Image (cartoon, rainbow, N blue to C red):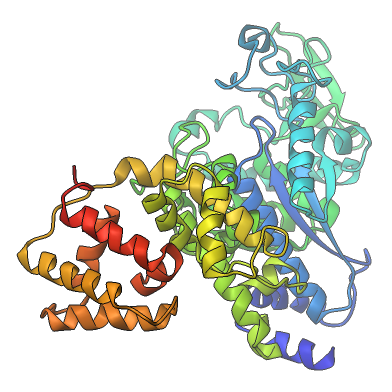
Length: 529
């Protein structure tokens, strides 16, 4: 354990780099609260999505890394800001007219349009918890409504009242652009109207620190005095974020790059309340196929459900692990590569020493309990097999797979079985509509005829490397320079794509006789037709 910890303290894997930043906060021992607190935030005005998964998955990776380099206990708090007022009716829910009647109520008082829970906030919180449980995350759930009502924030809220002017000094300069008109009306406190239950954005007219109250004016003109404790008010979200960090002693939180200015303000507010701000980590945003930022409201890019229809959650975790500080396209075409890279890392892990394992993404994906890969055929190869075989289900692929790997079966190779099912779905949904076969030119035709002839005489069995050498030799014999032009021709004529698998491996999987027949179809123009 000591050697592993020493290696972790030197590892350049980003979760360990982040974990060491957290450890520096408590170099002399555990904090007074007895644990290190990691937090993620969730806005339950919408359903949990792929960004929610990414934030919890990445934070969990840092938490596990911290637990390897330190004996200080940890907690992960998934916080739902469900006391926010409903500002607009979502477009993807039923009973929208009824919801419109509940505008400005806290989300936990908005009627559930689905009719399954006490409120819209409760519905989305339940969805969040089911979502996190599905992936086996270890976390504690926290509700803003509950924390405010139970008084868990009371002490911090009284400090906000006491330091009201300081917080206004922090916030007011930030109210530029569309928020500039709020400079004269802004208050960090949002009273919950005892008349309507609405969360009100109104000025604070009077403050009484001794009594712990504020005075504001209702829309009907009546002045009302309410305590800032016990859930009678909530804070604007930026002060709320900073107050939460201070009240709970949050040590680490991630957020998207678009929230950098907000996080900086919240950190200042946290310090103004007398507590150190957490260690913060901003990650880059995901882009769609056109390079535009993915938006929940636009529905562009790839959803969580989309990914899991075609690949495992572990492959998505790998995508989240890789280069969190780099903007990445999150679209369907990244899935096959992520699947194969995940299994490449699994296979590499078996032969690595301790230091190399700590730098392997699968260590962080699985928290050190790394399984063996049973994917003996790459996902990209399965896609091509589905293409040429016209398979409608995974059972059709298994007929080819068993010939290539006779010891493999669905029970003994669950990764392969799942991937075969995913590959058929992915091929029919994305590959088949985009295939564009072409006829070979004269040199390509001669080379393919030569390849077919050599395969008819082949006596080397299903040795993928030997078959690859054979294909390679044919390309050289017919003067292809660079040789990738030869392989590109094979892919475009036989598979209808400009990229493809190692062709020798493809022949071994699909079969020599079957490949000869495929070449003959390509030469006859049947595929292009």
